[in-house]
Image (cartoon, rainbow, N blue to C red; front, side):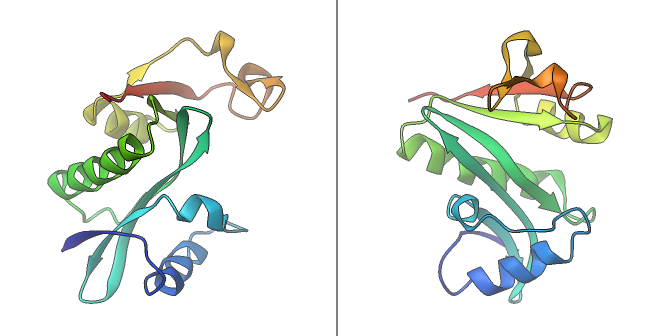
Length: 142
């Protein structure tokens, strides 16, 4: 298995991988531009990407097969951190609804933050469908 940055050749495979996820109805290609993928023998096994908001990156697609080991997930994350640093982002933000996803983000170094001052668009996060989510931040060193 290897970690690759998204490129034109990988784009169709990444879209196909994402469309198999029942909760994804539409793919945001702008977000995919910031993606790194786990690939083995020409097959996608995972993706991690972010959407840019000024000096922050919001984790958008973080999907991987359960058989992927922690070390590969860490490599994938490190590749995304490298990319985020190159474009001078200051932090990555994650919104995690499920306990097991919260644990993954915490294992990668994310820290929970108070969501009282977090907004999605103009609306406070606690007034959205993410009111029960844990909001976490990863500080980039650049």
